[in-house]
Image (tube, rainbow, N blue to C red; front, side, top):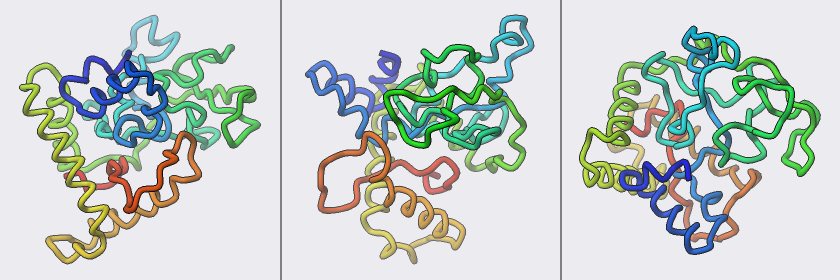
Length: 238
């Protein structure tokens, strides 16, 4: 299981692995803190490192890109992308749990778009893949210094260099804090909230209020809005 290395540090991964081992396979599709709605990528990383093999096939897809708490690439100082720069569709709308979008698609390189050109909703028979290269220069999607520092901190907690208990506590508190903001918004807006931050929270909640039309949504009917991870370009996580 590709997320198993993070189970000791990232509680949603540990919970998902326990559910799968207990036979609750589809629980991973309903946990917003486990997988984003679609696959994401750093266009510079997929451009490759200049070696012969990466010039031919592109750079590797990274497991960390599958976690919602990973929203930027500190190395290239850009937000992760989820749309193809050519067809402008999500690159993996049909199955968000796969590391590489549509791995069975033929005639397309790993670092090229595999989104269907003929269908806008997931089906059992997706059309031909777009095939356009995902590597590009997203100059308009650059996080500020504070968000880059936050991303470095999160990546450090997910790596082996920090105590596991510290990482578990951090992500548990992050999930609880996001849940409190979601439940209490906008009543807590006046408490230390700037206008740009309030606008970012409003946009984030508007996106997740419409999540019911997305695939693999939970069929439960909670009495309050479920805690959801901050969107990639929202400063709420800081």
